[in-house]
Image (cartoon, rainbow, N blue to C red):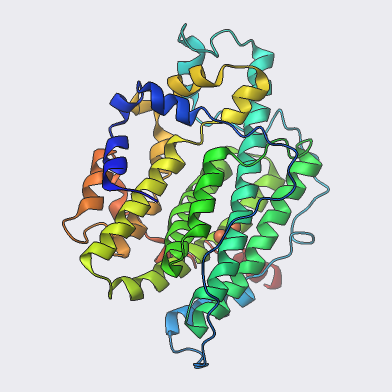
Length: 380
Ligand SMILES: [Fe+2]
Ligand SMILES: [Fe+2]
């Protein structure tokens, strides 16, 4: 998926922001709104194991038992009767960023009036929730693949619970978009789609874990938390909170499983994982630039991408926060410092190493379990 050259040439964002080829590549949007399926080769063998010793991997077994008691039902645990006004649900994600785009005379958004800004807010929310939903389907397929490819019985059991979790996540995001946001208005972003395809196509089972459980889910957890903080809409808030309860467990599953096999890899093999992780992180941070929204509202996509990439670093709070789960989890896996510490250097270059000592998700999933807390409160 990546080479050292590629990765190191993309971290110098300030320089790369004015690289016309990069802007052209990043300005691609998905205009395919008619296809009903997309097929990907998954290049892997389905593995039977004849070792049925439940609990051989005690921490995975505990996670499996926890997952069984933390299931929720998207139809009955959420109050779908709540009325939602899409125009009145989110504080602007980052007021400084909005300011930057509205006040800069070169910005393609400079001339938007108040009504157009409100429309942009609704479109952006629809786009974000649509991408969450498509990403959730990626997680559904990846976890089904893990059930097939992981050789340990405790991991197969746990992954099977995650398949159910991910189905529920796709279901509730799709329902929210359909019933409360006027429909699913956006296809899967081109760059998100390419990343999901790469993860699914890799034949090595630990790469499915690293790509999905650690990188995509780690970033999703941070993005859900950010939206959960910035919306007052009670249905979306609870939906996100419940999804987060599950996601924290999913990232923990990735951390617990990979810790075991990374202990057995060579420095060269670990370096491949470091590069895979860094490339995935950059793709998630830099390429999901709402290209489909700009196209839909008639703003020149290339101009907007150029402006977004050139945004001053101090305004990129959200982009940095997305790393708040990924960096500590990579550290816990030993990826940060493996070999000559290549990944530590890269995360330092892009200004996110500060997160390395934040709580890692291997530890925090019990704290994030809102479902269990609600059940305990209801039965008290
Ligand atoms: Fe999920
Ligand atoms: Fe997940």
